[in-house]
Amino acid sequence: MNTHDLIAFAEKYEMEYIDSTSYGNHLFRSRNRMRTLSIANFIQEHEQTVEWSSPNFVMLIQLWGTSATE
Image (cartoon, rainbow, N blue to C red; front, side, top):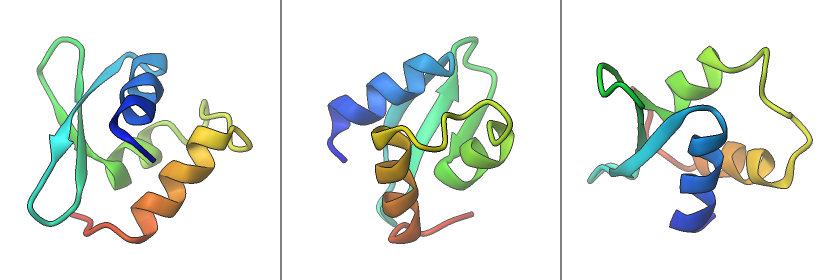
């Protein structure tokens, strides 16, 4: 998954993609900038609304599987 995909995915869920950490954990931030989420937290919080079969989400899950989590 490239950065463009991560940004598009985050925007759909009213988040913004920040960057990846040195541990490879991609971070998202709420639009109001009050919170920062790792991929693991992002998935947990959006599990009821995520389109599970969407190609971007499948790639996100694959990326999460190879990333460090909090």
